[in-house]
Amino acid sequence: MSLLVVGTVAFDAIETPFGKTDKIVGGAATYIGLSASKFYDKINLVSVVGEDFPKDAINMMHNHNVNTEGLQIKENEKTFFWSGRYHNDMNSRDTLDTQLNVLESFNPVVPSSYQNCECLMLGNLMPSIQQKVLDQLQKRPKLIVLDTMNFWMDNFMDDLMIALKNVDVLTINDEEARQLSGEYSLVKAAKKILSFGPKFLIIKKGEHGALLFNEKEVFFAPALPLEEVFDPTGAGDTFAGGFVGYLCATKDYSFENMKRAVIIGSAMASFCVEKFGTERMNGLDMQEVNDRISQFVDLVQFDIQLV
Amino acid sequence: MSLLVVGTVAFDAIETPFGKTDKIVGGAATYIGLSASKFYDKINLVSVVGEDFPKDAINMMHNHNVNTEGLQIKENEKTFFWSGRYHNDMNSRDTLDTQLNVLESFNPVVPSSYQNCECLMLGNLMPSIQQKVLDQLQKRPKLIVLDTMNFWMDNFMDDLMIALKNVDVLTINDEEARQLSGEYSLVKAAKKILSFGPKFLIIKKGEHGALLFNEKEVFFAPALPLEEVFDPTGAGDTFAGGFVGYLCATKDYSFENMKRAVIIGSAMASFCVEKFGTERMNGLDMQEVNDRISQFVDLVQFDIQLV
Image (cartoon, rainbow over all chains, first blue to last red; front, side):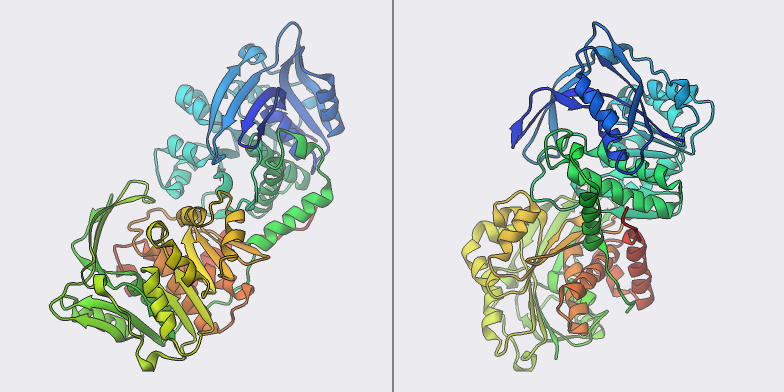
């Protein structure tokens, strides 16, 4: 069994109030894979890069249990590139440049060795590409998680609604939940979105934490209050990677275990933002992960006698 | 022993997307008293109203264990009046009218029967008036909680800094914490504010919950995700009333017990916003309070084995 991860592998150039980077390795699938690899050791990647993509970065994936048989390397083409500048509040950003390059004609191919996966993580991509992956699977995974964003809601809502019918967990942020549902209250938004297909909904609120909903229950995980958020790029993907990696490792898809997975995802995201790009995730050891999870326990646990 | 509550007793006229009210009874001390009364039965009020203030409302306070010996009733004068309109997001509002009336010349007098109080709650008022109450106490209460707002930081920062030296707990919202400290990160803001005098800081984030800091620890309490927020007026005061009422009743001022008090305050605030003004708080019974606290337990509790 394995975890199939589909998403972008990219170059990013990032500016924050703390500094700026040249082109560094990024992309949703990169962050998801690195984060999931802390909990699960059979990760299969489907993505696309150009011939400009560094061998070192592919080796880094191999060192994190990420199989790249499904990573297409397009000769004479260039890797997807995104450049952005974060504002002082670190919650909003301007896109400075987007070069789709290899992504423009991306046709995902699931290698036969990737079939029979336990879990599928569909990173943020055009909904029709996410659907193409679903269509290639001979057997439905135990868990399908889909991440998306407002751009696809603006331009490809019909395709997104089709893909949503097939997924178990949808992850979006609060503004996207409001857009997708037409409801301002997140409780009402969640009810409506769960009627579109997903059995679980995760609403990511950045520094304000994350909410997990199913039809009957709701769980809240805070974000760790940090002295500095250095670079938020990839935090949502790192959250998703920790979430799905933990679930795939424990093979328990109950609400109770999803609560744990949301805490794990939040802990992983809290590391991601401490340095530029994948730097912090790349060097992370399990003792640090365990210590961070303990901080989350301390942050929210209380015992109370009813009065 | 007793809980001394100082703050406004007022008329409010409120518009929200759900409706509007004529003049109804409000004011920080009213909400604090009603909320605290669920947990503690000796509440002493210091405030001021005009002769237009209804006897019924004073009787309502008596019925909630609020002693009004320290409530000045000014003949031929009018009660403080505030009118505001909430925006669709319910987080921002416009003030339509403010008539200070009796508040303009308010000189708080602490009756001798109010001396030797266990806890003091200084509701949002001009800092020099809060200080006048502190100056009248013959014995320092076990716990002093002070609430304030950006208006006093803009106009009376020096007075506020003097008052802060004497308090145990300061409650402000996230923007106010940033303004008071000059730090964007709430973790850095908390460190700085704790150096001004308070031993504990509560940062209220509305629908995003509340953070409790001391020098070494941090605790996070979520807000309950609600289908509708009907009227946010008084939510912060209701939070403070539940917080200080619970602490005064349990007489345990440790960080562990403050965590419980923050959850209690959050639960009380979640009721306040369900109806206009004090209506929901007035009719609340303890079974409802206990049920709501259980919902908070369900919302954030998880058990996790380190991985």
